[in-house]
Length: 505
Image (cartoon, rainbow, N blue to C red; front, top):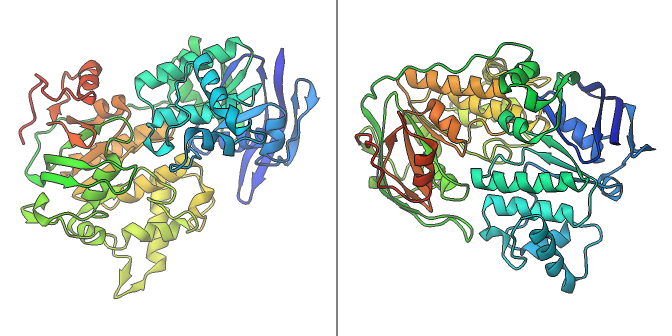
């Protein structure tokens, strides 16, 4: 039985056709994957289903009846729920309060905690209704979003990159929940760039390229490579790396300790580390273990006593970000929209924000806008950023395209040390491979690269050494040669006395 039928859906924006004559259907109880490169039109399509976007032409039917939601409330009333890639939760409120705020018709206050506990038990999503959201892990926050949707008994659940910040154990729990929902008749539209997950979970897949449906497949009968090549319309090349001997020490951390920046932050505790020229150091950890705080300390957003951070023999702990950039230290934080990029500024202006110093985009306070636009255009072309122009606002880009722009902006500055947090978050397979290759190329030129990532396969693909960040403490780095995922899992759990040989610091 077909639940949702989409026929000839088209949506155009100035300079780009986001969806062109898109047609596909989702059966009752089906887990259906929607695949495509960044900018392929996936976000526009699911926003249309959820009532956030009005199509220019085409039709949708839900259970055989015309389906034309004018806003998300209308979509929810028709049985559609959506868990967005970026959580929309208030850290200072409890689980119960957040769930009630996100419902059109929440249960009575005295009943909502019991309802949350009932749904949590039924679907294997343990939650304490009285917990403050700011104290929850990324996986627990996602459970809040899912339980909020499930309390409204949806017939179609849309999930956008649901596993991007989850541990492997949390992914397993999520998949068990989705399979249970599917068995009960709930349909799921699932967007992810993790193609092995698609193969494991989904019954069917629809592939978009440049806004057009270019194919369908049964994921279990299709390899990840075949799906990726359908998405990009070309043969994929795996990143190539040369294992060179690291050079001279560029960065030394000695007892780096930083208090938690706020109630829900993580303190850094006595971190000691050396990063060398030509080295790619991978740092892994479950979200919320100090990744953001470490990037802030390394980039200069958070200053510390001078002697805690040393750059080529010079104490720099009190230097601000632009002063560190002038020395050759660049950084790209995890949160792209609002931190790495200013949403309401153009791509040209965003190129200026961090490129002014190293790319010499201003002279005596006078901005060279022609040179700045040229830099922004170079980023767009080198990293295949899908955008109408350099004058497009950052918020207008899809998440993956903004990620490509932010990472490209930092890589092209040819820093001596680049720190990146979640470099391929939300980007497609081809773009992820290109970004990883660019990081390896930067290291091959003699720069040091620190990759902070929750994608352990990514770390093993690019890193020469690995360290685990757990509750603000960093393990001694170990070589990635012969390092297994089981060993990494032990390190992430706090087992820092690994027998694996330590990298000489």
